[in-house]
Length: 169
Image 1 (cartoon, rainbow, N blue to C red):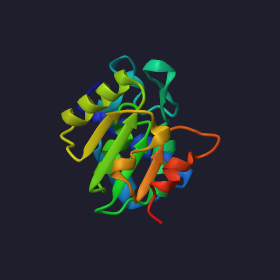
Image 2: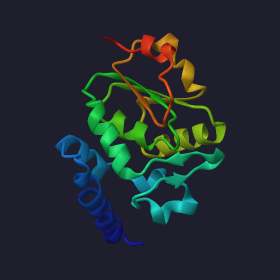
Image 3: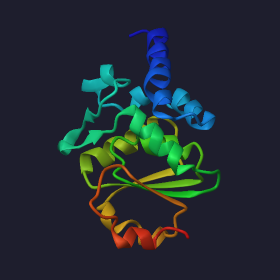
């Protein structure tokens, strides 16, 4: 795929998937245009980087569809200087997006293969304000608490009380 066709696919993703989902924050749209999603997709699925569905990841996990990630990013409303906790970092893409605005991102991933993949992807992208830890996100990161924003990369029946205790009021 040529650089021109990749950029066209990225633009189509933003204009045809993300904007119609009521993502209209200019900062979020700019981040999506600049942080290369395809660099965070496993090589076997790189051609699907801009597709409107979840991408399979090791351990039975998945990378959320672009419109869901964009909506999470917009709803998080991350401001410069904030400290973020991400639960379920997957390949590191959402952490990379948040790192562009936040002072620090602590990213937890229970799957060791994904934690290593996220570290490698973030390093390759030149992002240094994200710390990826292989850990169970249900306990959060109490030693680093209080966080301005906590983002869960998956669904839970109930938010664990340990996470709520780590969130700034």
